[in-house]
Amino acid sequence: MKNYEQYKRIVKFTFSMIVLSLEMITYKFFWLTYYNKEMLIPYKRTGNWLIVAVYGSLLVIFNIMYGGLKIGALKNANIIYSQTLASLCANAMIYLQITLLTKHFQSVTPLLAMTVIEFLTICIWSTISTRCYYHLYPPRNVLLIYGEHPVTKLMGKLHTRTDRFIIGDCIHISEGIHKITKKIDFYDGVIICDLPSHTRNLILKYCYGKSIRTYMTPKISDILTRSSESLHLFDTPLLLSRNTGFTFEQKILKRSMDIVLSSIGLIFLSPLFLLITIGIKMEDKGPVIYKQKRLTIGGREFYVYKFRSMRVDAEQDGVARLACVNDNRVTVVGNFIRKVRLDELPQLFNILKGDMSIVGPRPERPEIAQQYEKEMPEFQYRLRVKAGLTGYAQIYGKYNTTPYDKLKLDLHYIQNYSLLLDIMLIFLTTKILFMKESTEGVTDHQVTAIHVISDEYSDIAEKF
Image (cartoon, rainbow, N blue to C red; front, side, top):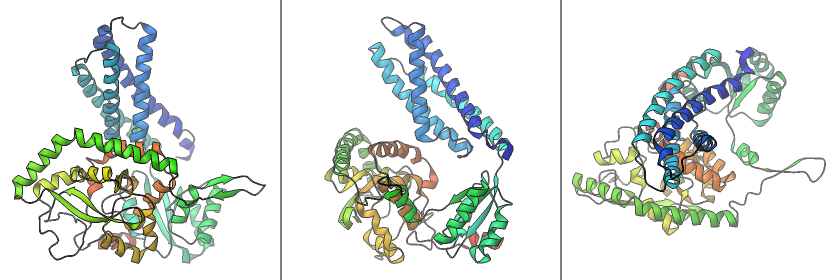
């Protein structure tokens, strides 16, 4: 594997160019056959190449956004899904260009046929390229180094990606740094869990000196440091972390985008609002909108609006709890709208009012947030910005992601905020709408997402 490691980027680039070229060739055929001749003055050679180049640029942009070219990083099904989304977005944008160039709304039938051909091409390409990649670069045999914090949940996650990692062994820091470094030499990589800073630094420096790849679960301080600004005031480098939240300009731009997008959303999605309303009323004749107290910026409480997806008496015992797997409180209509996140749509009114933003940390219930903060006082750091309809933790995490991991994801967003990041997260939201694992509930015996070690993961730990 090490002999081929230096060529990995070349291999990925080659595979990416193959699928992009095939899609561009497909578009060129349909453009010349159906759309170019609809122009008052059809393009010749140079113009046609430019049109194809624009399409190729759109494919690259959307594939980068959705991760469609991450061969090796994503599973085959995820690559196909991401590539297909990128293709659909590029085709939608190119149809607008065709309309502008021909000055008429043209038939979408050729583009639909092109989309089908591209989908089949993507499926074949993804299967072949993924198999070739894993043949050249089999899973890494890694050593997991852990400390006092439980690692069973992380191990469970690693065992779902045996295409990338094989945990060869686990070692506790109590074994001593000398024994740990001797073991490291026999592995392709090292996974460093939440270790004390001194021990972690020694391991990182050792791996760096030996050119051994390291994977590390970040601490909160790591996320704050990564977003720091480098200062060169003298010959000793300084890292500046401002810790002030969004700037005035960022707040203005973000609020403007919230008002515009929520207004457009409420107008264009009004037919969908009506259909969901009819569905909920027909099922149990209960109220359509469910309001619940949540937290937003500065710990301020507000009522969030949602389409009701549970029975009217879902919390008649007065205990605030998250939805669990196979929750019998969820109605039939509610089950569907929860899976595709349609129950969240009334929050557009919250955004227009200013209680929420399009993008931001998920608004937590005061009772649940209070429980999280007892275990982890830093959880309140999420309240430095407004709660959001979608966000970094909602996209890269799950409904049942642990509070600590949610905090780290949300802090990454807060510390690295930009308008471009907001736009990217809005587009990525469309990707997770139909991903079942993103709405996975907590286990039946949990009322919050605070981690409880299961017997299954305990068994995994005992293997080592």
